[in-house]
Each structure stands twice: as C-alpha cells, then as structure tokens.
Amino acid sequence: MHITAFKLAQSRRGKLTSVDKENVLSSSKLWRKTINEVAQHYPDVEVEHLLVDACSMHLIKRPAEFDVIVTENLFGDILSDEASMLPGSLGLSPSASFSTNGPSLYEPIHGSAPDIAGQNKANPFGMILSLAMCLRQSAQQEKMAQLLEQTVDHLLKNGITTSDLGGHYGTNAVFHHFIQELKEA
Image 1 (cartoon, rainbow, N blue to C red):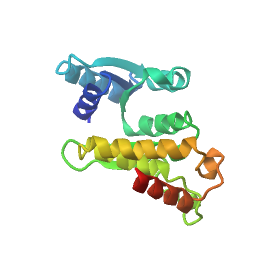
Image 2 (image 1 turned 120 degrees about the vertical axis):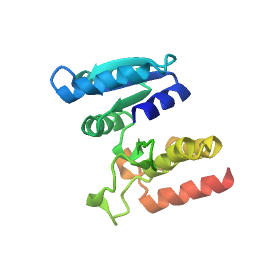
Image 3 (image 1 turned 90 degrees about the horizontal axis):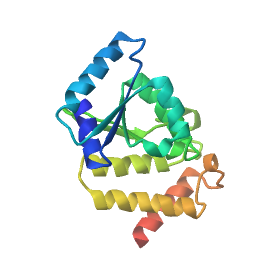
C-alpha cells in the first residue's frame, strides 16, 4: 500500500500525507517508520506526517493543501467520510483500496448504502467517479476517466442531482441524463 501511495503521489502533485496516531499507538510508530523507509526511494515526493486528529482539522481548514493521503483503514474510513462533506455529499466521493499484489477495490465512499437501497435515492456520481478512478489507476485510460468526470461536472453545474445535493432527480433519472451526456460527447 505504501508503494502504491508514493507512486500515485509521484503521478500527481508530488505530495503525500501520511496519517497515523504515532503519539499514542505503537502500531502507528511502525507505520511512520515504514513510510519514512519507503520515502527514501521516492526523493521527488514530499512527505508530511500528521496525527489523525490534526489531519481531521486540517481537512476542513485547508483541504486544497492535500493531494494523496495514506493511512490505515480505520482512520481512512473516518477521514474519507469527513472529506466527502467538503463538496456537499457523501454521494459524490469515490474511493479506492489499492493493492500491489492483486486487484484494487473501487467503490463510492458511502458503500452500498443499504438504508436507501431500492428507493431511487442514491447519488450515482460516487460510483461513476469510482469507475473513473479505476479507469485512470488500474486501466491507464486517462481520456475515458476525464470524460466521465467532465460529464458528472456538467450535470452538477446544470442542477441534475439527487436530493442529497438539493436536486429533485432520482437515481435512475440522474443516470439516464449521464448516459445521454456521454452519447453526445
């Protein structure tokens, strides 16, 4: 996971934020040591270490300063839910669990959202953006990933959204508009 995070940071803005609780957890001491060891092989990547509570605060105060965040699952779950509120909804955020020795998992941050399953309420953008991330990271299909992202952006700008973003469209209608936009692109 650490190597994948460094490679991702290398391909983006060259900044990696490692999040742990090194001041309390011995497992976080090992985490930080490992990050520092891997960082020696990626001198072009700037590494910032943050404690999870400080990261939580900085995500709200200065979100644009982050690029790639690497952390363990528990902290990642909490921080990704928090960060998803920056654009206004859990339904907009893609996520990935990268693997160096097997397939990676791409899914919306909200997961399967069983509480609204079958009610035509789920925001499909998180899944679409997860697909874009998959196309970019696992299939090296940058143009297709950008097309999906631009289509979602266009729909958002035109108010074609589900109720979590103040829209009046259901899941099916938003997805129908998405498909129509793709056909016209």
